[in-house]
Amino acid sequence: MLGQAKTILGLDIGSHSIKGIVLEDTKSGLVLRTMGLVHLPPQAIMDGEVQEKEIVVSAIKNLIKSLKIKAKNVCTSISGYSVIIKKISLPRAPRAELAQNIEVEAEQFIPFDISEVNVDFMILGEDEGEDDQMEVILVAAKKDVIETYIDILVEAGLSPNIVDVDVFALENAFTHSYPDQQGTVGLIDIGANKMNINIIKEGMSLFTKDAAMGGARITQDIQDAFGDMDHDTAEGIKLGGVEAPEQSPVEEVVTRAVENWIAESQRALDFLESTYPGEKVAEVYLSGGSSRIHGLDKAFSKELGLPVYLLDPFRKIGIDQKQFDPAYVEYMAPQVAICVGLALRRGEEI
Image (spheres, rainbow, N blue to C red):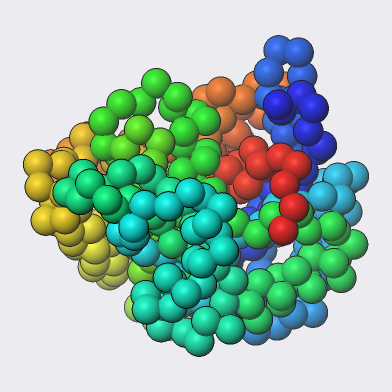
């Protein structure tokens, strides 16, 4: 139960920023106690792998200090090329038996040496097409990447409890915030350098995909279009908070990126329908820092032909308006969805 669990810091270590959230379990339900972020320089983290370890450690320490975070237990997540997620069909077996044999079963599905990865799984249920088979989500993550993240957290003075995967943290945030949601839903998180897609039905994942595309490319292309423009100005133009010297180059850059995101999302929807005939996504929820691009939800809705919304991970979490400006929480909500999903985790150990 949440009331019996220890406080945990949800820490989303992205390539553009590190976000931290602490939730408190009260008699009236979960309440947001701490939220903030610190930016990272370009190249500190690339493709989900840490390139500048000392910089990341320093950034986490600065975030903890500035937010006066006392919680030491931390949950973080990884994504990118170091993580493989596959839905597979295996002969029916008790969970304990599968746990003993999962590495043998997984070896044929993983493009890494089995000794180089940590393997986990989730049994979804019986395979509808085969009576003696069951559907299983297989997750494999490279050990060296996990160890690097754990080392970073320890050096920052934290006690790592859980290393999750971005798409499942996002799913956790969604299912907590929208408990009555029915049907099949697409969750799309667009960060600085990655795009995570998770299609879920009744709280269970049907299909996941990571793509190396995000909002950082837009910022860089805006800088290139105007020659000597600095990063912060280009970022402001991208998000609509700063007026561009000339609008047409910006529109071209943003349109090109959005078209790529939508095309990638459409491919995911097409794959779902080909894998599960008759299965259709009813709604799509966008999150991540790049989801705040003005009009992005409308562009997705028009091209996909579906209702598209910005995901609000705080729908079922209390907000103290004396501590947090409601406008700030609303602004931050979509980009901290994964972080909220991490902060919702309790009491498990690596």
